[in-house]
Every structure is written in C-alpha cells, then in structure tokens.
Amino acid sequence: MKQEPIIRCRKLSLWYSKTQALKDITIDFYPNSVNALIGPSGCGKSTFIKTLNRLNDLISEVRTEGEVFYRNTEIRDPGLDVTDLRKEIGMVFQKPNPFPMSIYDNIAYGPRTHGIRNRSELDDIVENALKSAALWDETSDRLRKSAMGLSGGQQQRLCIARAIAVQPQVLLMDEPTSALDPISTAKIEELLSVLKEKFTIIIVTHNMQQAMRSSDTTSFFLLGELVESGNTEQVFSHPHDKRTEDYITGRFG
Amino acid sequence: MPSSKTREVSISALLLAVTLVCVAAVLLITVYLMWAGLPAISEIGLGNFLLGKEWASTSSNPKFGILPFILTSVYGTFGAILIGVPIGIGAAVFLSKIAKGPVKRILTSAIDILAGIPSVIYGLIGMLTLVPGIRKLFGLPDGASLLAAIIVLAVMILPSIIKLSAVALDSVPKEYEEASLALGSTPMEAYLHVSIPAARSGIIASIVLGIGRAIGEAMAIMMVSGNVANMPSLFGSVRFLTTAIASEMSYSSGLQRQALFSIALVLFAFIMIVNALLHLILKKGKKHE
Image (cartoon, rainbow over all chains, first blue to last red; front, side, top):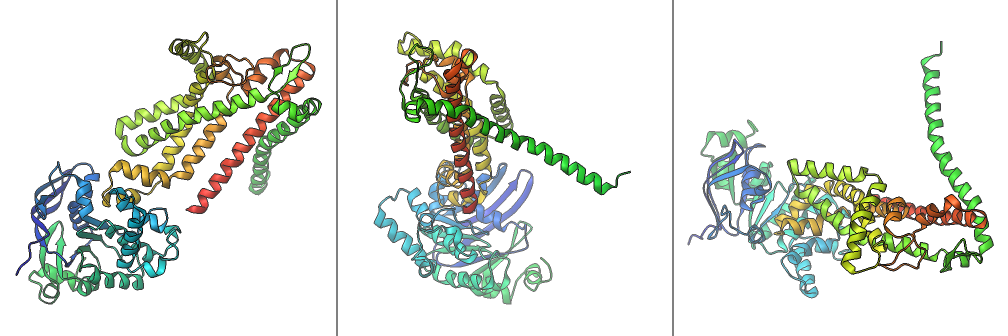
C-alpha cells in the first residue's frame, strides 16, 4: 500500500525580484523517510527547503507560483499562520546556532513559545529531545550551563534536539554537517536513521557519500531545476539523466 | 636634517603629551575636590552632612544636611530610568529590527539631533510646557517639581539608551532570530526572548550611561524642579546635588562655599561608582561571548 505524501509540490517556481531561482519543481516526500537534496551551490536547494517552512518570507521581493501542500494545507497561502506551519515543519541550519542561554532553555524555548509552562512537562520534553538527539548522556549533568560551551558537533545535535522538542512532523536540514568534523558528522548521520522513525527528513547536502549512506531518496537540483529524483540507490547506480551522472561522478559542481 | 626615525619618535612623544593632559585633568579634579571638599565635611561631621535633612546655608544658625539633595538625585535618576528604559529599549528594537529604508534614516537622524540639543533648551521647553501642564493636570499651586525633572531627564537620556541598545541589537547574529522563527515563534517573540537577552550586556551598558547622564545633569532640571531644598516628593519643589552647587556658588562664602565643594565631592563619588559599574558590566559581557 502506497502512503500519502506528507509534502506534495507541483510546478513550484520562485523568483528573487526578477531572478528565477526555482523552475517548475514537482516532487513528493513521504512520511518516515530521509530525502537528500544534492546539487552544486546556488542551485536552489536551500531556497527550496526554505519555501517549505516559509522562511523565505524574511527576504523581501520573493514571489512563488505553483502548489506546495503539507498534508492538506497549502503552504503558499498568504493567510496561513506560519507559526503553526513551522511547528509542524522544523529546521536545522547549516551553522550550529544555539541561543546564548542554557542547554535546558534552548530545548525548552520552542515548547515555551507554544505555551507549555508546566515545569515537569518541560523537564520531560527536554530529556526526551536530548535523548532523541543522542546528546543526553553528554549533557544531563550540565543542563543549566550555557550551550555556547558545547563543541560544534554537540551544538548541532542540540539544535536538532531543539527542533524536535516542538514535535514537528517534518525536519528540514540545510547542510547540517558542513561545518562539522568527520566524527560529529558520522554521529549526525547515524542519528538520521533513528530520527526517520518519527519524522520525515529533508536534508540538503554537498556530500555525495552522505546522501548515499543515509538517505532513502535523492533529488538532484541544477540551476533551479529538479533534474532527477528517485530512490537513492537507483539515482546513484543508474542515473537517468546525463547531468546527474556527471555530477555524482564528480565531473562538475 | 632630522632623520625620519627621530621625527616619528618626537611625534609619538607629542601625542603622549596631549593624552597626558586628559589624565592630568582627571587627577587634578580628583585631588582638588578632595582638598576643597573634605574640610567642610570634617567640620560639619560626615553623619550630619550626608544624613542631615535640613539645608539652611544662609540662616544665622546654618544647617548643612544634604540628604534632601542625595535623595532627590537618586529618586530623579531612578524615575528617569523607570520611564526612559522601556521607551528606549522599545525604540531600539523598532530601529534595529523593524524600521527600514527612509523611516530608519529619519528616525536615526531625529535621535542624533535629540542627543545634540543643549540641556538649557530641554529646560526651557520643560519650563514653558511641562511645568504649567503638571500644574493644571494635578491641580497644584506650582508645577515645578520632581516629576517635571524626572520627565525632562527621561527624555534627555533616551538618545544614549536608544543608540547603544540599537547597536547591541544590530550585532545579535541573524541566525538566532532565524532559529527562533523556525521554531514557530512570531518575530516579536524572537526579539523579546532571544535578541534582547543576547544583547543584554550592551543594553545594560546603555542604561548605566543613561544613569551617569541623569545624575550629572544640572541646567535643565534646575529650570523645572523649583530648586527648593525640600526632602523629595513627586509633586514638591526639589533641589538636586548638581543644582545645589550651581544655585549657591555665585554668592557663597566661608563654610557654605566649602560645603558646596563637599557636595561636588559626593556627586563625583556617585559618577565614579556608575563608571566602575559600567566597566564591570562590559568586562562581564566580554567574558560571556
């Protein structure tokens, strides 16, 4: 039985004032999968995922066309409450960006924003989020210490924990390991396979091995176009498009 | 012909000399205030001087208690901070995070102009609008009061609070706000719960600077506060540490004159404490980064 897609995108185009950054993107993402977006820098991958949580709203003069649905909600709807949308679709950024406050307050920030004040409830959320992000063992005795004292890899896992503390359905990750060392990267890749049991993950990456190792589907973007999208194994072993083959074999980009 | 090396050395010596002028001025003022201010304190007695509630410098049985001045300065400054800080931080958030393009330019230059207006003009406008306004609004015989002085001071400290807080808010990494938005906060929640705490040390420094300006102000508040040496009350006519010196210096003599220097010494001590506080905060802020 085929599941319903959790995100359904039809002919999505996007312009930054007059420059077109996305061209007719049509793609589905299914629940509980890891979906890698690959492609050279500036090809629209980050722009695309920021469309999904409407973070592109921050940039003036952005215009979109087409359809993007999260379940039955049209994401592009100007009347949509973006705070509700972002509660469902969380994001982890390229550079670890913990708030300059304690580890506990970082994780509790989202739940507090959404109205949870009960102390023991917050304690549970913080503990569970840190456990899910494989950070609990390293931080359980220093929850009140500043998050800025953590290593880069720990900070990024903290950001993952912070994102999942609001219990989203989808996690967007914008090159989450590009600023990290190989060991921290391996830890986060390991985490992906566990996290997909609860979440749908869409991850932008420049690392071919990472896409191959840890994703179920791979989509190749080039100059704002979605060139090819499919099962990761198939895309890497038998790419349909010559441009995909050239990119994954390292001939350009 | 002197070599370029000797020229370099002599120029840097000259620069050192002009810098030393500043240091010398500070030292000179400190020493002079001690020398001029301490005799009266020892004659009156430190307790009588600082805690005495009555200042009657020209009566036949003169009293030199400056508690009214100290309390007025403290209350006045505190009141100005109470009004000025929320307005200042609010304006700083608007300026740094919300205002764009021409609105931002106009606001920025308005605040710069506000900072440059001479204090006597603040006093003049306060005297002509605020004092009669307070008199009518509260049905008082005279509107010249601590309240009028607090309002004038609050406006006067706004520019430094706004400018420094806005600079601190500007330097909060955009990533913090993005992270907050991505978690489903509204922009206002992001500013309140992330940006302002992240800019905390700069904002506190701006407040301390405002305190320094409020404590040291004389001219503007002299014109709106009635200038009578009462114990402070919000609607009563009051006299500050600064205005106590300014209003009697021209005709003072003997112990009275010496006591005015003692007041200056107390004022100086206040400013020193505020400065030390500022240094402490800035140092602590650096450590956290």
